[in-house]
Amino acid sequence: MQNKNSFIIKAVVLIVICEIVGVIAGVATSDGVTDWFRTIEKPFFNPPSWLFAPVWTVLYFLMGLAAALVWHKGTSDGKYSLSDMKKNNVQIALGLFAIQLILNFFWSFIFFKHQMLFLAFIEIITLLGFVVLTTIHFYRIYKPASFLLFPYILWVSFASVLNFSIWWLNK
Image (cartoon, rainbow, N blue to C red):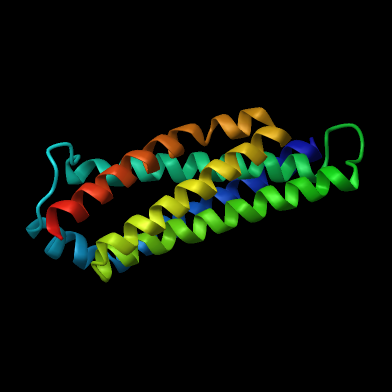
């Protein structure tokens, strides 16, 4: 029971952190979204504005849950204590997760607040690289956690193409 409660606490903490990152970035850059972004040229495959908030809410939830699963694996394996090597792998995986979350946070500022479309594209490609690295490390620790990041990889891949297209159309 203590192991289950421990996981629930970790999951709540990480999901809330991820969701807060999204809310802060969204609120801080909302002027750019509602004003500037509406006036620029966008490709035909640009999704409707209403779609972004629910998609990101789900993605942040999945990200937090995935990280909680890895964190939980890093503090116990259910029956035996973990080796130092496995703990180190968990620390690396969670470090990569933190880096990608920071990159995720700053992309909105670069794109919407500062309207630096090409720099935002470079940043989102870097973000995508860290998301893939995080997923690989999560896979090595706990496969189901890595599977939770697949929708995130798909969305950031799509967002990268969208970001590039918007830059290209507005350069």
